[in-house]
Amino acid sequence: MNTAQQIKDLQQAAQTFGQRLGFLISALNVADEVKEALLVLLPQMTEQQLWDFSEILEQAYINDKTIEFDQQLIADLKSIVESYDSQSVGLLNETADQLTALLVKIKSSFK
Picture (cartoon, rainbow, N blue to C red):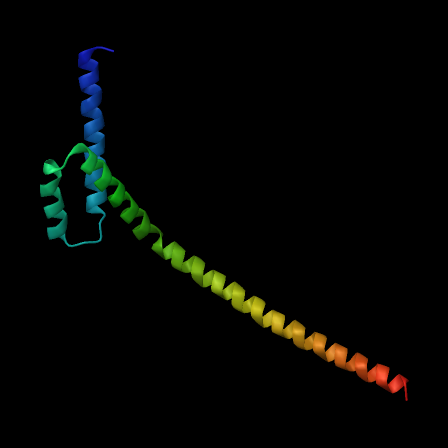
């Protein structure tokens, strides 16, 4: 690969990374002033800091977008557990009643 192509590829990668950072910052659930302050800080960061910051922003984005799903999943699981618990109690009571009836039958057969 020639130098001109390498430069073009690096520019494209930098542009894509910048767009990704811009999207992630704009998606943050913070005041516009905070977003603007972050944009001012970006040019002062090292490449590693930019990658680390990008990963943090991506995790924040994922957490923000999945919180409703997580809350619904928790509610659904609680509902399942409650249903299971109530069915278990019902089965235990039914079994206890059947055992009591069986014991009464057994006792009456010995009389």
